[in-house]
Picture 1 (cartoon, rainbow, N blue to C red):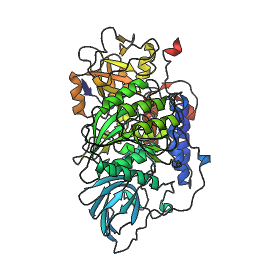
Picture 2: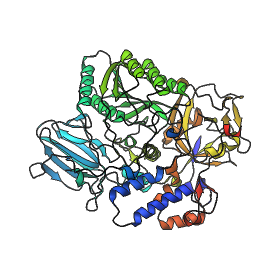
Picture 3: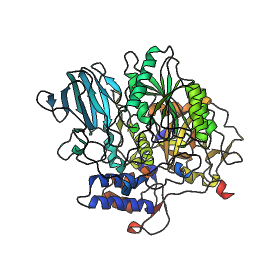
Picture 4: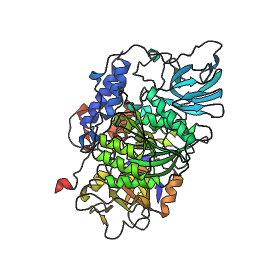
Length: 634
């Protein structure tokens, strides 16, 4: 099906222009870096928003009908004034409590109810006693747990549950890309999110108070209120008393705390004595927990979730987060085809054993069409317990009460963050494409090599040896003459199927490139593939189209063994409303030094862009190409 090719050969030549958006962003980045004494917090927010503070290509949920709450970006001017320092640790550091300390490891003893908070990345081990972190109860037999206490999310504290509890924390080396912070060179969104101090190379740092943070960020500590504790306690008791395993779904609007509650619940379940696993039905395509946006999936979880979503992607070969099955809806919202979305969820539900607890990650669309779809999902997935976070529509709440055991948690006030929802999706997608094969211990690593330097897979789309049957567009299909321009530099889902959708009358080909595609219906939308006869294997970025040889150049994190298995199977690439991968377009600019950038300019070696006009920074502009859709030509 495929062979690898050198990155330089696969890239081709392109014009050396910088778009108005990209130019402005680069100017902001350079200006930020050149001003001495700039406030750390201000710089963190500016750098994070420099990439994603512009609507990505007209597909933003906030600008489309049917989405209940838009992705809200917080302007810098509206940030509240700095609060007084908050206590983060009550640990007394002295010779009797610190047993060992070095640049690599810190071993210390805690009394019952003492707590300590670190920021950064580290391996955590409880060698004696009991301790809790983010809802997980750890003991001497729990083994080593990888913790990513990073600033984009609430920082969890380590709490001793017994006197003389001994904790070991070990630094994560950055030389072998074990650290997710290695991606900082590719995107400013990953800048200043971990422990970073000019006097120490340790990957984590102790915080006694919030003012101890050398970068002076808006750090938020994970706090579990009494309502949440009570609901978790009731659900824990139900796990003991119920004959059948419960299926629990948190319901609430965007930014109501569903992801945090689900992690607390999941960690509580899998660290119970004798439990050790649960299934996670991840059906929020906009903010998924275990994969890139645009997917719904079923994952078997056996390890606590101790980091942001981009630090624990699921895969078929992962022992900690095993991907059972996944489907793509090729968008961050199901508004274009709610029926297909429900069918995908139903297919995933059929693959869950009846004797294992299930945590359901629902989306934040809880009014109008979203509420209707949510009610259908509750009915067809046999949800036993629903947890509402904040007020809901009266009809939706009545429906949940009639079908499930209802638990209520008051919605907490949203926190100010330097990362918008669009930023979070970009970080998750970037981390997904840069993940490497896991280590012998199952630890995830990241490849800090730029997309432009990665060797792509070469996939034929014509002839008997074609590795791809056709291109299928979910949502609004582009006009055929512009299909190649839409595909070049875009994200697509790799889907294996056993359906009869692709027959001689259904597949057509573009005139110039001879690319096979599935014709759309009269309304401009395509028929989706039956989820019972298909599954999504992962995402790919189309780095180029070789028209002469009828081949696609694909960059994907799928391992070679999985790619090889596709040789004898039916494969289709599905495009749709994925976020535009602007992070990929800007990696070279973020990673290259001035000498490299000058060399790139001289060689006209920039992908995915086209020359439009000679204006902007240094007389150059790049513009992303947005060909018209089928409807716009009618």
